[in-house]
Length: 131
Length: 157
Image (cartoon, rainbow over the protein chains, first blue to last red):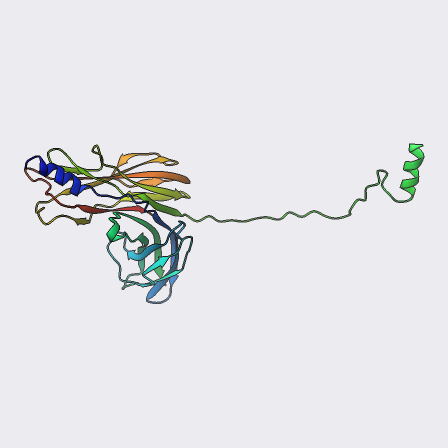
């Protein structure tokens, strides 16, 4: 019995990741400054899938400390075909602040049934000033 | 004879060698390009962790384990980092805390020794990034039988 436990743990704990998974992404632009005359500002980013298979993508907005920021992301989650790119519009309220520094991140969505456990994240840094 | 031929051609307004010269002007054209900071990450393979003999550690660095491999391509002017592990799936029998430590290293255009801290990638190029993950139990706690899964976020910003 004592011999079975380590073996069982070793086998069960093995985090299988093989299987030829290859999903990644890029995003442009990765830097930007926005001047807005309203209570909100908008940034358009272009996530891209430069690889040979479809990927699922999340676009999320964070502040400088990587706390989630309330924003409208259109669309927030979508699939990108191999080699495809699409525009995503992000509208962020100033929330009473004269300047907002945010990150807009494109994240690959790990496939839960394939134990994909690396999440690739591309983040752009944007500064918005309210006039 | 040749002198007379050249003289006759010159008087006729033709070049001596018989080539017709085009009368024209030259102009330079310019090509402009602006390459914005771009970073591309591609997950080539996920990692495999195995348990240590004393069951106190799950690690991709142990014999039988393997790091996750990620391809990176960038124009430079970006930072590479890994996040602390926040998403972990453990068997129900595992009721003790685990300290998860992700690290990474890179070869290629951006050689990076193993680190857990962010690294600035100043120059352009492609690199292969290896991501390791180690889970450690403290004190008498040990890993239980079952399946463990943890998500490591690799970030380029």
